[in-house]
Length: 496
Length: 141
Image (cartoon, each protein chain N blue to C red):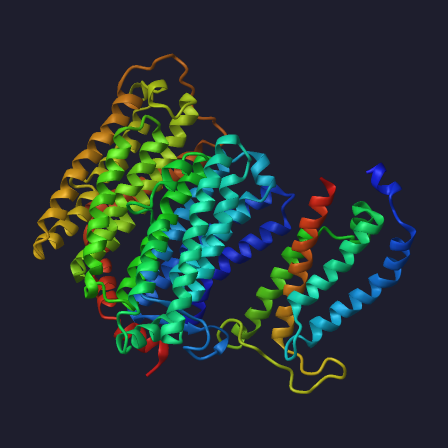
């Protein structure tokens, strides 16, 4: 039963994609299949989460080859939470795509590609083998390359070139790091690596792969100074794709960073935690200042992804159980909120035909409901109490104060204030000021439900986290506990 | 296309007639010996798609598509399904995904047969599908 639960989040998107490939010529069937697949993925993720919470860390040795020789899949609470979030965002984006993706892209296999992307993301969260992690990264990246370029619009191709180049470079660094690690430790199983690296006679040697991995994952997670590919590309594909990327892809980088720097390397040795903290502060600041200078809805949101990544790795840099719990809470809150904001920018585009703030306006008067839907995630992103972002920041600030890192706490508070400024800018320009021209249309009747349902659903979840933060917080706390003390992870992977 | 049809060489098309069945047979030989000797689905698939690519050079892409009968993209899907299925068989027995299951007795010619060979057949089809999709698309440009 356990081994089934671990494999299902991979089998469901894979089977959905393969079946979708076989019924490429039947768009109606494809849509039903894609929605069902995403729904099942969410369900299986929830099943895994419940099971992991009750029964501890789950592992399965694929092909019954014993660890550390075969490939291990392992799910601790952190992995399980991430898989649930992947299912949730997958479902929201597929629903939104039903109402917004053109038949051209559908014919070229849009839905199978989305599911392959989800497969890669789930695989990265569930694998217990560092080379296998690389493979899942590639699965995810290759499908994202195609999704980014699919449609072949001019701006899209330009964005795709930057995106592909930088990400390939990061993959190359990752691969080199894996090679060096194998040279040092003679194993690729992460639990086994964790054991070997702790007792290696040359701990300094392990610094080389550690730094290479920090840079490789840093590029994927878009931390300072490696973030510039993100705002250059995320606003170019259709909004459903942007939302999917914004929600999930950078967070896979953050996940890998947290996994590697809790399980494999001890960040408190050699001052890695200081490097991470400095990078996190600079990431927050550059991201938020970059956003101030922007006047395009999706570009503002893209820069905010960067600044928010800073908060997530701040928790890793502080490296206490509570700060890691803060990071996990932050990731969960952020994925939901950021995807929602991108989806809403798509709704605004549908209504007014532009992403440029100067062309927008008057939405509050014509669509007060949409305005409220925007305000919920926007204020949550800025961290206004009692919304989910407030709790996430509160945990991190508390963790920072506990270990007397006052500087990073101050930075995080200032950046949070600037985020509010940015969100209010969108609010003023798009919703509050009077419309520059009267070209307000209403959402098309036919696919209204498909467009509004995911936005409403994600907003509801944000409100739920805001009102009952204890549920998610206690989950994050348990997950952080498993990260800080990996003995259980190692024992379950390698056996006694 | 007209220009290309005119360039068909008699030598190439005659040689292809003899090479095609040989290459296809050889690809299956490579596929079958794969699970315990050098070979396997990937190489076998490459050999088979080389045979079909040769046919498409000699007689044109349209003729090659007609001979293949099935869209190469469908081959990718079918191959992947077979590969997934080979992994699921072991789960039905309560073993981890992709565990190899073998028949008890050796079969004549084939030797020991099991789910890894089924997986290889899946890989074989996926490789043919992918390579031919690319080659056909490029030569139809």
